[in-house]
Length: 611
Image 1 (spheres, rainbow, N blue to C red):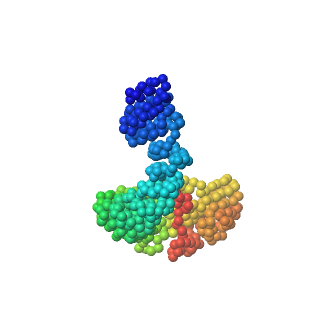
Image 2 (image 1 turned 90 degrees about the vertical axis):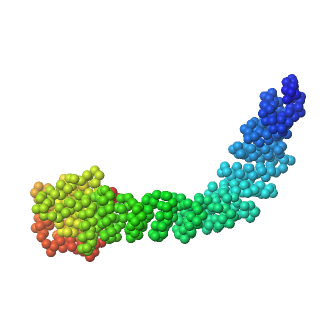
Image 3 (image 1 turned 30 degrees about the horizontal axis):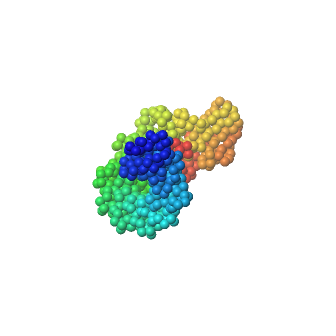
């Protein structure tokens, strides 16, 4: 160090290149990092550019061995500035160091420079391995694959770590085919995959749906003495469950349990979903209880399985599953109870539907008007007396205010203590139109179907009149002064269409006969569905209305003459006493008791969408 100081203080330090290089090289070789780097910095600050390649290599090696890559790069930069020629040792040190430090482009540039230099020779296996590993892990798979092939072509033996890095990189990037091809090449070369690589390849094949390949690899993994992780077991069980392979999934599940591995929540869920879809109710119940014994909450999962049976239309299985849930002390929510109730009603299982509705109401759930009306629609479609009685009992269980209204509507004025019109108005005044407007329209449509079928035309006209007064059908009737009057019944049920036609024609008749206002034309906008229903009723009375595609129209003068006929007056005033008359005869033709499909009670499109 003393000689170093003397040489550096000389007016021309460049006159002692061997001395200065020898000091830095000796300090570096003997592991004296701080004085070695101190001397290097003093030389750099003094503008000395005579450092030789072996000296720099010794300092580079020491810095990299101590993990000071950023200091080593300072030495490398100084070599470039000083024009110091790099040899094979420099490249072997610098290329891997730059790659590991994330300076991949710089390392590749230096690697290419090394390959082009004469006399340097091919890179060592360590340099190739580092480059392949870094490129693969950084996602530069094409470059990594090229480096890997070059390494093999040069004659280097590829290590397990390098092959593992390449296979992992390809698999993680979704290039499973290329990864498996390299995997087979690796196995043929006698390399033994690591536990982590086995696990990754098995799970990747399973998730890609290659379950046969995954099963074979899983067997090879066990034969190699590797014990599968819970994640690997779970992945295989879940993938086989998703594919619906019941036998394999259950076998893997039991192997998992026998190995002392506890299935996770996702594994139980996938397995139970598969068993529910396959309708293996007893097996699903057994697995659910095992899930409970493992400490997982099962209420949500059990309800999800119940919903699968309901959506699949397997109502009987859904009822069995609900009974199992009750016996195991598992509760479900009111939404699912309602869904199962509606499914039972649809299937005609009224004896099972009633206790469900009792449970629903008993759990403080509110039966809304939509639900009540859907039950009423089943009553309208019903064909036998026993079922009618069962549905009436279900309606009474609902405890909805509409049921009290229905009961009052069919009683006499003595029990009701008020006229029908006043009674109907009182009910409609209690409806929350802001939140229940669409539900109220649905109720009116189904109720009018029921009243028409029961022959209660007077009550039906009262319901229509009040619902129109409350603007449930605000654009149904249009008066365009003396030009055109129209009734739009396209969004109504069959019964509502008939009642509204009778009521509106009665209004038109009063306005024309009492006030002398005669429009040029009158239109009944029926749409294609209701066109023939209304046309048949009016044709029986020899009406002047002509039928077009979606409209019944007639001149105002012709309609005025038609209104003057006694039969029309009786028809509009609802004075026809018996079913032997024309109107009731036509109604019986349109609603035969043996053909329920002829009297469709489907929701109008607008109501169905709002529902």
